[in-house]
Length: 363
Image: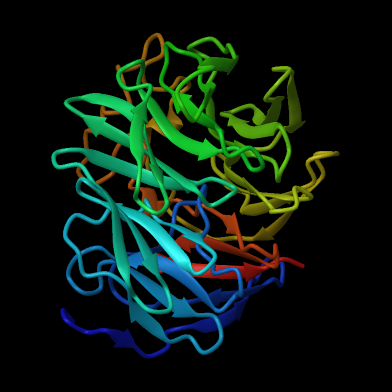
């Protein structure tokens, strides 16, 4: 399969047997296939394509699948692709490879390297609301920081390097100079900082044994939503730091609709399916049942890694005999995320043996 550029449609439309929702499996190859990370966007704004990662050509690369006719086209042929790093913004996808941050035009295929940092590791990319800045986790010599670069590649700098173990930077939905990010225990989980590194502060000072995870913004508001693992779906104000429980369900990975009117989450322990949640009332209903294997032995524990009684650091990723790590493999998690118009939710399921990319229509 190496060298192949296009694949014929693999899609199949189904009805979820439990809810009746219209589900489309977009891929059906005997290999790893998954949408981009749920904190990012996998869809073009015009709804023509969804971007996904796959190793169908012998290594992980990015692909686009037509939501009109199902045709699949390879976008990259690069070494060291970080398969969960991509983020679609309008008709471009930002992503990282070993030591490089890229911007690729989905129409023309033109790939622009915005930053080249030999020896560095990059994580997923977030883009500011004014489209002028991109940011990604960077790790150099064992120290993490947030790499900031202009989207035209003309300027870059690193903030917060070495201050703590940090993850998942996300630009504020309306303020291009502010980000949120995550930290490991024993630090509080939720943090914010300005794009120049100033104003670094914790949003809510949870204790090390209070397991907050998978935070993101609710629409274009100052509200941050997250899972209080084993307890429920919660929110906290970016400015006031007031904590509130939205729903006492087994919410895991969660994402807001672009307008903030609805949230979607997968669930685990127990897995009750993908749920749509009203952030005002906490009312929720099952959208569909992915049936993913939901691997990661740490999720079955009462405390996060690094908390009292736990192993130090998220880097503790010892594999079990079945390939399971502390928090993955990530492609075994559904990771639901909305399309820009809020009409579709993308997710991954390995219920059929191989992880495949799916979309489900919101009713």
